[in-house]
Length: 208
Image 1 (cartoon, rainbow, N blue to C red):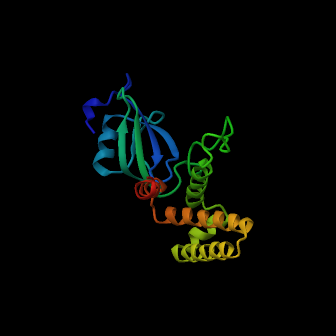
Image 2 (cartoon, rainbow, N blue to C red):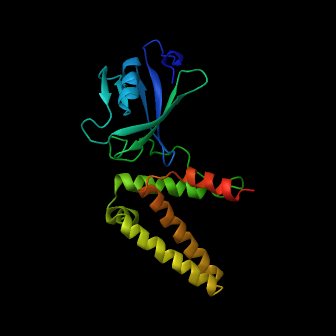
Image 3 (cartoon, rainbow, N blue to C red):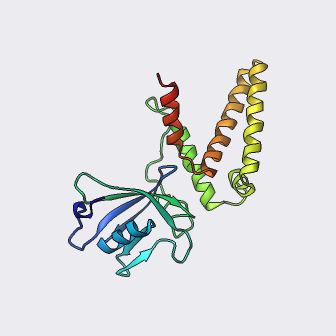
């Protein structure tokens, strides 16, 4: 990144959109001045400028919910940033995974142009469960038990898929395949492996 290409406004600030590098969910919108941008690049963790307190702040300094920078880019005008991060806890001060958790328009994923969008939605829900750990949620249970439990469930569901297919039971196969896909998404999140990378390999190996 060439700092000379970044355009700061009349107050010396540039908006920074923070995005989960794994799920691609937008986590927050904050502002950086030149100093906080330089510190972010130097430390590889997010630093912002607080407009209310008029001072720099290091994300996670008090909460421990730090954000490790894995990518950063600016737009065509140079006056806005996208910061891709690996997170160590919820992004929002309320304890929510993302600051953008209130809907004005409900998302409609069952569309004719993107019938697989539910996978993206599910990936984001799993990411939120990992960070928020709501009590009683099955996904919370899996993350708290750790990778061995997740792998056990992946193995169980794979076996159920095989049995349903051998029994030529399409209805059962449908349900078991859905459960297997869900547990695979949990596994990818636990391993911090973006689904995009898996899909890229899928396209490379089997797309032609």
